Image (tube, helix red, strand yellow):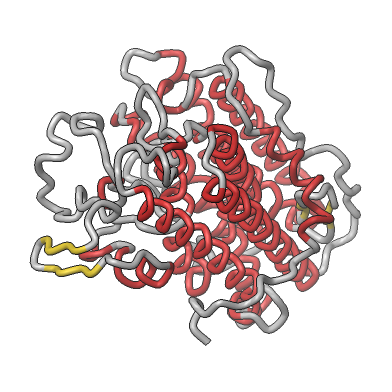
Length: 449
Protein backbone atom coordinates (compact mmCIF):
# COMPACT_ATOMS: atom_id res chain seq x y z
CA UNK A 1 0.00 0.00 0.00
CA UNK A 2 1.26 3.46 -0.84
CA UNK A 3 2.24 5.51 2.19
CA UNK A 4 0.03 8.24 0.72
CA UNK A 5 -3.14 6.13 0.73
CA UNK A 6 -5.69 7.45 3.18
CA UNK A 7 -5.88 5.08 6.09
CA UNK A 8 -6.98 5.19 9.73
CA UNK A 9 -4.46 6.78 12.04
CA UNK A 10 -2.59 4.35 14.29
CA UNK A 11 -4.28 4.09 17.66
CA UNK A 12 -1.05 4.57 19.55
CA UNK A 13 -3.11 5.43 22.62
CA UNK A 14 -6.57 6.99 22.77
CA UNK A 15 -5.82 10.56 21.80
CA UNK A 16 -8.38 12.25 23.97
CA UNK A 17 -7.41 10.23 27.05
CA UNK A 18 -3.82 11.43 26.82
CA UNK A 19 -4.46 14.94 25.55
CA UNK A 20 -4.72 16.57 29.00
CA UNK A 21 -1.37 15.12 30.03
CA UNK A 22 0.16 16.22 26.76
CA UNK A 23 -1.05 19.78 27.30
CA UNK A 24 1.36 20.06 30.22
CA UNK A 25 4.17 19.82 27.68
CA UNK A 26 2.71 22.70 25.72
CA UNK A 27 3.35 24.90 28.74
CA UNK A 28 7.07 24.10 28.63
CA UNK A 29 7.54 25.77 25.29
CA UNK A 30 4.58 28.11 24.97
CA UNK A 31 5.20 31.85 24.95
CA UNK A 32 8.72 33.20 25.40
CA UNK A 33 8.70 35.84 28.13
CA UNK A 34 11.85 37.77 28.84
CA UNK A 35 13.34 37.22 32.25
CA UNK A 36 10.83 34.54 33.32
CA UNK A 37 12.29 31.66 35.30
CA UNK A 38 12.26 28.38 33.41
CA UNK A 39 11.37 25.02 34.92
CA UNK A 40 13.44 22.51 32.98
CA UNK A 41 12.42 18.85 33.30
CA UNK A 42 14.73 16.83 35.54
CA UNK A 43 15.74 13.54 33.88
CA UNK A 44 17.40 12.37 37.10
CA UNK A 45 14.30 12.26 39.31
CA UNK A 46 12.95 8.82 40.13
CA UNK A 47 15.70 6.74 38.60
CA UNK A 48 15.73 3.01 39.24
CA UNK A 49 18.43 1.80 41.67
CA UNK A 50 21.25 0.01 39.88
CA UNK A 51 21.90 -3.69 40.51
CA UNK A 52 25.42 -4.75 41.38
CA UNK A 53 25.59 -7.90 39.28
CA UNK A 54 26.43 -7.93 35.59
CA UNK A 55 23.45 -7.06 33.41
CA UNK A 56 22.47 -9.35 30.55
CA UNK A 57 23.36 -7.72 27.23
CA UNK A 58 20.29 -9.09 25.50
CA UNK A 59 18.05 -7.42 28.08
CA UNK A 60 19.86 -4.11 27.50
CA UNK A 61 19.16 -4.37 23.78
CA UNK A 62 15.51 -5.20 24.41
CA UNK A 63 15.16 -2.18 26.70
CA UNK A 64 16.76 0.02 24.05
CA UNK A 65 14.11 -1.19 21.59
CA UNK A 66 11.37 -0.48 24.13
CA UNK A 67 12.64 3.07 24.66
CA UNK A 68 12.85 3.66 20.90
CA UNK A 69 9.33 2.30 20.38
CA UNK A 70 7.87 4.53 23.12
CA UNK A 71 9.79 7.59 21.96
CA UNK A 72 8.60 7.33 18.36
CA UNK A 73 5.06 6.53 19.50
CA UNK A 74 5.04 9.75 21.52
CA UNK A 75 6.44 11.68 18.56
CA UNK A 76 3.65 10.34 16.35
CA UNK A 77 1.02 11.14 18.96
CA UNK A 78 2.36 14.68 19.33
CA UNK A 79 2.30 15.08 15.56
CA UNK A 80 -1.37 14.05 15.58
CA UNK A 81 -2.07 16.82 18.09
CA UNK A 82 -0.17 19.26 15.86
CA UNK A 83 -2.20 18.06 12.86
CA UNK A 84 -5.43 18.72 14.77
CA UNK A 85 -4.23 22.19 15.80
CA UNK A 86 -3.40 23.02 12.18
CA UNK A 87 -6.88 21.88 11.10
CA UNK A 88 -8.42 24.19 13.69
CA UNK A 89 -6.25 27.06 12.41
CA UNK A 90 -7.36 26.44 8.85
CA UNK A 91 -11.01 26.08 9.85
CA UNK A 92 -10.92 29.31 11.89
CA UNK A 93 -7.86 31.47 11.16
CA UNK A 94 -7.29 33.79 14.12
CA UNK A 95 -4.27 34.90 16.09
CA UNK A 96 -5.33 32.55 18.90
CA UNK A 97 -5.56 29.49 16.64
CA UNK A 98 -2.20 30.35 15.05
CA UNK A 99 -0.61 30.63 18.50
CA UNK A 100 -2.16 27.28 19.47
CA UNK A 101 -0.71 25.63 16.34
CA UNK A 102 2.70 27.08 17.17
CA UNK A 103 2.47 25.76 20.72
CA UNK A 104 1.55 22.32 19.37
CA UNK A 105 4.57 22.42 17.04
CA UNK A 106 6.88 23.30 19.95
CA UNK A 107 5.44 20.49 22.04
CA UNK A 108 5.76 18.04 19.16
CA UNK A 109 9.50 18.66 19.15
CA UNK A 110 9.86 17.41 22.74
CA UNK A 111 9.47 13.68 22.07
CA UNK A 112 10.88 13.81 18.56
CA UNK A 113 14.22 15.34 19.52
CA UNK A 114 14.68 12.57 22.07
CA UNK A 115 14.63 10.10 19.15
CA UNK A 116 17.66 11.65 17.41
CA UNK A 117 19.95 9.33 19.38
CA UNK A 118 18.47 6.37 17.44
CA UNK A 119 19.40 7.94 14.12
CA UNK A 120 23.12 7.41 13.71
CA UNK A 121 23.79 3.79 14.56
CA UNK A 122 20.61 2.61 12.84
CA UNK A 123 21.67 3.96 9.47
CA UNK A 124 19.80 1.58 7.18
CA UNK A 125 16.36 2.28 8.67
CA UNK A 126 16.41 5.52 10.66
CA UNK A 127 19.12 7.76 9.23
CA UNK A 128 17.92 7.46 5.64
CA UNK A 129 14.34 8.17 6.78
CA UNK A 130 15.30 11.14 8.99
CA UNK A 131 15.73 13.61 6.14
CA UNK A 132 12.00 13.38 5.46
CA UNK A 133 11.07 14.74 8.88
CA UNK A 134 13.94 16.82 10.28
CA UNK A 135 16.15 18.04 7.42
CA UNK A 136 17.69 21.48 7.91
CA UNK A 137 18.76 24.12 7.11
CA UNK A 138 16.26 24.87 4.36
CA UNK A 139 16.08 27.44 1.59
CA UNK A 140 12.66 28.72 2.61
CA UNK A 141 12.23 30.59 -0.66
CA UNK A 142 11.49 27.23 -2.26
CA UNK A 143 8.21 27.13 -0.33
CA UNK A 144 6.84 30.66 0.13
CA UNK A 145 7.61 34.35 0.01
CA UNK A 146 10.81 35.60 1.61
CA UNK A 147 12.33 38.99 2.36
CA UNK A 148 15.30 39.70 0.05
CA UNK A 149 18.41 40.74 1.92
CA UNK A 150 17.45 38.99 5.16
CA UNK A 151 19.69 35.93 4.98
CA UNK A 152 22.42 37.67 3.00
CA UNK A 153 22.67 40.86 0.95
CA UNK A 154 22.22 38.92 -2.29
CA UNK A 155 19.48 36.53 -1.09
CA UNK A 156 16.79 36.51 -3.74
CA UNK A 157 19.15 37.53 -6.55
CA UNK A 158 21.60 34.66 -7.01
CA UNK A 159 22.40 31.13 -5.90
CA UNK A 160 24.93 29.22 -7.97
CA UNK A 161 24.16 25.82 -6.47
CA UNK A 162 20.36 25.90 -6.13
CA UNK A 163 18.13 27.12 -8.91
CA UNK A 164 15.02 26.53 -6.75
CA UNK A 165 16.00 28.58 -3.72
CA UNK A 166 13.41 31.28 -4.55
CA UNK A 167 10.96 29.16 -6.56
CA UNK A 168 8.06 30.01 -4.19
CA UNK A 169 5.94 27.00 -5.04
CA UNK A 170 2.98 28.41 -3.13
CA UNK A 171 2.82 31.36 -5.53
CA UNK A 172 3.70 29.41 -8.68
CA UNK A 173 1.61 26.40 -9.72
CA UNK A 174 3.83 25.85 -12.77
CA UNK A 175 7.61 26.06 -12.65
CA UNK A 176 10.37 25.76 -15.23
CA UNK A 177 13.66 26.29 -13.43
CA UNK A 178 17.16 25.12 -14.22
CA UNK A 179 15.86 22.85 -16.95
CA UNK A 180 13.40 21.14 -14.58
CA UNK A 181 9.67 21.55 -15.23
CA UNK A 182 7.38 21.14 -12.23
CA UNK A 183 3.61 20.87 -12.21
CA UNK A 184 2.72 22.23 -8.75
CA UNK A 185 -0.95 22.81 -9.53
CA UNK A 186 -1.99 20.42 -6.76
CA UNK A 187 -0.11 20.56 -3.46
CA UNK A 188 -0.47 17.12 -1.90
CA UNK A 189 1.60 14.99 0.46
CA UNK A 190 2.72 12.92 -2.51
CA UNK A 191 3.83 16.01 -4.45
CA UNK A 192 5.83 17.31 -1.48
CA UNK A 193 7.51 13.97 -0.79
CA UNK A 194 8.16 12.66 -4.29
CA UNK A 195 8.66 15.80 -6.38
CA UNK A 196 9.53 18.86 -4.32
CA UNK A 197 11.55 17.55 -1.38
CA UNK A 198 15.28 17.98 -2.13
CA UNK A 199 14.45 18.72 -5.77
CA UNK A 200 17.46 18.94 -8.06
CA UNK A 201 19.41 16.80 -5.61
CA UNK A 202 19.96 19.83 -3.33
CA UNK A 203 19.71 19.00 0.38
CA UNK A 204 18.65 22.57 1.25
CA UNK A 205 15.46 22.18 -0.81
CA UNK A 206 13.59 20.96 2.25
CA UNK A 207 9.90 20.69 1.44
CA UNK A 208 8.67 18.35 4.19
CA UNK A 209 9.00 17.75 7.92
CA UNK A 210 9.12 19.82 11.07
CA UNK A 211 11.10 22.73 9.65
CA UNK A 212 8.93 23.24 6.58
CA UNK A 213 5.94 23.34 8.95
CA UNK A 214 7.85 25.65 11.31
CA UNK A 215 8.47 28.11 8.47
CA UNK A 216 4.81 27.99 7.47
CA UNK A 217 3.71 28.75 11.04
CA UNK A 218 6.25 31.47 11.86
CA UNK A 219 7.55 32.78 8.56
CA UNK A 220 11.11 34.06 8.29
CA UNK A 221 12.81 35.08 11.49
CA UNK A 222 12.27 38.79 10.93
CA UNK A 223 11.25 41.53 13.35
CA UNK A 224 7.65 40.43 13.00
CA UNK A 225 6.12 37.02 12.37
CA UNK A 226 3.76 35.44 9.89
CA UNK A 227 0.22 36.80 10.44
CA UNK A 228 -2.75 34.49 10.78
CA UNK A 229 -4.28 36.24 7.77
CA UNK A 230 -1.79 34.32 5.60
CA UNK A 231 -4.31 31.47 6.05
CA UNK A 232 -7.51 33.49 5.74
CA UNK A 233 -9.83 33.04 2.78
CA UNK A 234 -11.63 36.32 3.49
CA UNK A 235 -8.74 38.60 4.50
CA UNK A 236 -5.80 36.98 2.74
CA UNK A 237 -2.42 38.61 3.31
CA UNK A 238 0.64 38.10 1.08
CA UNK A 239 -1.44 36.31 -1.54
CA UNK A 240 -2.06 32.67 -2.47
CA UNK A 241 -3.68 31.79 0.86
CA UNK A 242 -5.58 28.81 -0.55
CA UNK A 243 -2.36 27.19 -1.76
CA UNK A 244 -0.56 28.06 1.48
CA UNK A 245 -3.36 26.31 3.36
CA UNK A 246 -2.98 23.28 1.08
CA UNK A 247 0.76 23.18 1.72
CA UNK A 248 0.44 23.38 5.51
CA UNK A 249 -2.26 20.71 5.56
CA UNK A 250 -0.27 18.40 3.28
CA UNK A 251 2.95 18.86 5.27
CA UNK A 252 1.36 18.06 8.64
CA UNK A 253 -0.51 15.05 7.27
CA UNK A 254 2.74 13.78 5.77
CA UNK A 255 4.63 14.26 9.03
CA UNK A 256 2.09 12.08 10.86
CA UNK A 257 2.31 9.39 8.19
CA UNK A 258 6.12 9.37 8.27
CA UNK A 259 6.27 9.11 12.05
CA UNK A 260 3.71 6.32 12.12
CA UNK A 261 5.86 4.45 9.62
CA UNK A 262 8.80 4.68 12.03
CA UNK A 263 6.63 3.50 14.93
CA UNK A 264 5.92 0.36 12.91
CA UNK A 265 9.63 -0.09 12.24
CA UNK A 266 10.23 -0.44 15.99
CA UNK A 267 7.44 -2.94 16.62
CA UNK A 268 8.35 -6.61 17.01
CA UNK A 269 9.41 -7.82 13.59
CA UNK A 270 9.73 -4.26 12.27
CA UNK A 271 12.60 -3.25 10.02
CA UNK A 272 14.56 -1.38 12.71
CA UNK A 273 14.23 -4.24 15.21
CA UNK A 274 15.23 -6.89 12.69
CA UNK A 275 18.23 -4.86 11.54
CA UNK A 276 19.41 -4.29 15.12
CA UNK A 277 18.98 -7.89 16.27
CA UNK A 278 20.74 -9.21 13.17
CA UNK A 279 23.97 -7.64 14.48
CA UNK A 280 24.11 -9.82 17.59
CA UNK A 281 24.43 -8.58 21.15
CA UNK A 282 27.80 -6.86 20.79
CA UNK A 283 26.84 -5.42 17.42
CA UNK A 284 23.67 -4.00 18.93
CA UNK A 285 25.62 -2.47 21.83
CA UNK A 286 27.98 -0.95 19.25
CA UNK A 287 24.95 0.54 17.49
CA UNK A 288 23.70 2.06 20.75
CA UNK A 289 27.06 3.64 21.54
CA UNK A 290 27.51 4.82 17.95
CA UNK A 291 24.23 6.71 18.24
CA UNK A 292 25.21 8.25 21.58
CA UNK A 293 28.69 9.28 20.48
CA UNK A 294 27.76 10.55 17.03
CA UNK A 295 24.90 12.64 18.36
CA UNK A 296 27.04 14.06 21.17
CA UNK A 297 30.11 14.83 19.06
CA UNK A 298 29.49 15.33 15.36
CA UNK A 299 25.84 16.37 15.40
CA UNK A 300 25.20 18.28 18.62
CA UNK A 301 28.63 19.63 19.63
CA UNK A 302 29.73 20.14 16.03
CA UNK A 303 26.90 20.90 13.63
CA UNK A 304 24.37 21.97 16.23
CA UNK A 305 26.49 24.24 18.43
CA UNK A 306 30.08 24.93 17.37
CA UNK A 307 29.54 25.47 13.63
CA UNK A 308 27.15 28.38 14.11
CA UNK A 309 29.51 29.95 16.61
CA UNK A 310 32.39 29.80 14.14
CA UNK A 311 30.29 31.29 11.36
CA UNK A 312 28.28 33.72 13.51
CA UNK A 313 25.45 32.69 11.20
CA UNK A 314 21.83 32.51 12.45
CA UNK A 315 21.05 30.10 9.61
CA UNK A 316 22.75 27.45 11.75
CA UNK A 317 19.99 27.71 14.33
CA UNK A 318 18.09 24.46 13.85
CA UNK A 319 14.74 25.84 15.03
CA UNK A 320 15.50 29.36 13.87
CA UNK A 321 12.02 30.35 12.68
CA UNK A 322 10.50 29.65 16.11
CA UNK A 323 13.63 30.68 18.06
CA UNK A 324 13.52 27.45 20.06
CA UNK A 325 16.87 25.92 19.11
CA UNK A 326 17.87 25.80 22.79
CA UNK A 327 15.02 23.37 23.48
CA UNK A 328 16.01 21.11 20.59
CA UNK A 329 19.56 20.91 21.94
CA UNK A 330 18.27 20.17 25.45
CA UNK A 331 16.10 17.28 24.27
CA UNK A 332 18.81 15.95 21.95
CA UNK A 333 21.05 15.66 25.00
CA UNK A 334 18.27 14.11 27.05
CA UNK A 335 17.94 11.43 24.38
CA UNK A 336 21.57 10.42 25.01
CA UNK A 337 20.80 10.18 28.71
CA UNK A 338 17.66 8.13 28.04
CA UNK A 339 19.47 5.51 25.99
CA UNK A 340 22.45 5.19 28.32
CA UNK A 341 20.21 4.74 31.37
CA UNK A 342 17.54 2.64 29.65
CA UNK A 343 14.87 5.10 30.75
CA UNK A 344 12.28 7.37 29.15
CA UNK A 345 9.45 9.48 30.52
CA UNK A 346 6.46 9.40 28.21
CA UNK A 347 4.38 12.48 27.46
CA UNK A 348 1.62 11.27 29.78
CA UNK A 349 4.11 10.93 32.65
CA UNK A 350 4.57 7.14 32.47
CA UNK A 351 8.19 6.23 33.27
CA UNK A 352 9.98 3.41 31.46
CA UNK A 353 13.06 1.90 33.07
CA UNK A 354 15.00 -1.31 32.72
CA UNK A 355 18.39 -2.93 32.09
CA UNK A 356 20.84 -0.40 30.69
CA UNK A 357 24.35 0.31 29.54
CA UNK A 358 24.82 2.32 32.72
CA UNK A 359 24.11 -0.77 34.80
CA UNK A 360 26.54 -2.80 32.74
CA UNK A 361 29.31 -0.20 33.04
CA UNK A 362 28.77 0.09 36.79
CA UNK A 363 29.13 -3.65 37.22
CA UNK A 364 32.27 -3.89 35.06
CA UNK A 365 34.11 -0.65 35.82
CA UNK A 366 32.86 1.45 38.75
CA UNK A 367 35.35 4.25 38.05
CA UNK A 368 34.19 4.58 34.47
CA UNK A 369 30.58 4.51 35.68
CA UNK A 370 31.29 7.49 37.96
CA UNK A 371 33.10 9.31 35.16
CA UNK A 372 30.28 8.86 32.66
CA UNK A 373 27.67 9.90 35.18
CA UNK A 374 29.62 13.12 35.82
CA UNK A 375 29.89 13.76 32.06
CA UNK A 376 26.12 13.46 31.61
CA UNK A 377 25.49 15.77 34.55
CA UNK A 378 27.85 18.35 33.02
CA UNK A 379 25.93 18.19 29.75
CA UNK A 380 22.65 18.61 31.59
CA UNK A 381 23.88 21.70 33.46
CA UNK A 382 25.23 23.25 30.26
CA UNK A 383 21.98 22.62 28.41
CA UNK A 384 19.92 24.03 31.25
CA UNK A 385 21.99 27.21 31.04
CA UNK A 386 21.28 27.48 27.29
CA UNK A 387 17.55 26.97 27.87
CA UNK A 388 17.43 29.61 30.57
CA UNK A 389 19.21 32.10 28.31
CA UNK A 390 17.00 31.22 25.35
CA UNK A 391 13.80 31.70 27.31
CA UNK A 392 15.11 35.07 28.50
CA UNK A 393 15.52 36.19 24.89
CA UNK A 394 19.17 35.25 24.39
CA UNK A 395 18.45 32.59 21.78
CA UNK A 396 21.09 30.57 19.96
CA UNK A 397 21.12 33.14 17.14
CA UNK A 398 21.89 35.85 19.72
CA UNK A 399 24.52 33.82 21.56
CA UNK A 400 26.58 33.17 18.41
CA UNK A 401 26.92 36.81 17.41
CA UNK A 402 30.54 37.83 16.96
CA UNK A 403 30.54 40.38 19.78
CA UNK A 404 28.80 38.14 22.34
CA UNK A 405 31.64 36.81 24.48
CA UNK A 406 29.30 35.57 27.20
CA UNK A 407 27.24 33.70 24.61
CA UNK A 408 30.35 32.10 23.15
CA UNK A 409 31.39 30.98 26.62
CA UNK A 410 28.00 29.31 27.22
CA UNK A 411 28.12 27.48 23.91
CA UNK A 412 31.74 26.41 24.38
CA UNK A 413 30.84 25.09 27.82
CA UNK A 414 28.20 22.83 26.23
CA UNK A 415 30.57 21.81 23.42
CA UNK A 416 33.28 20.87 25.93
CA UNK A 417 30.84 18.83 28.01
CA UNK A 418 29.68 16.93 24.93
CA UNK A 419 33.24 16.30 23.71
CA UNK A 420 34.29 15.01 27.14
CA UNK A 421 31.26 12.73 27.23
CA UNK A 422 32.27 11.36 23.84
CA UNK A 423 35.69 10.51 25.24
CA UNK A 424 33.99 8.56 28.02
CA UNK A 425 31.74 6.83 25.50
CA UNK A 426 34.87 5.73 23.63
CA UNK A 427 36.27 4.34 26.88
CA UNK A 428 33.08 2.31 27.32
CA UNK A 429 33.45 0.99 23.78
CA UNK A 430 37.01 -0.08 24.59
CA UNK A 431 36.00 -1.60 27.94
CA UNK A 432 33.33 -3.71 26.22
CA UNK A 433 35.82 -4.66 23.45
CA UNK A 434 33.37 -3.63 20.74
CA UNK A 435 34.61 -3.59 17.17
CA UNK A 436 34.10 -1.30 14.16
CA UNK A 437 32.43 1.57 16.03
CA UNK A 438 32.68 4.79 14.01
CA UNK A 439 31.59 7.93 15.80
CA UNK A 440 30.80 10.78 13.43
CA UNK A 441 33.02 13.84 13.55
CA UNK A 442 32.59 17.43 12.49
CA UNK A 443 34.76 19.86 10.56
CA UNK A 444 34.05 22.46 13.25
CA UNK A 445 35.70 20.34 15.98
CA UNK A 446 39.22 18.97 16.48
CA UNK A 447 39.68 15.52 14.94
CA UNK A 448 39.45 12.66 17.42
CA UNK A 449 42.43 10.37 17.80
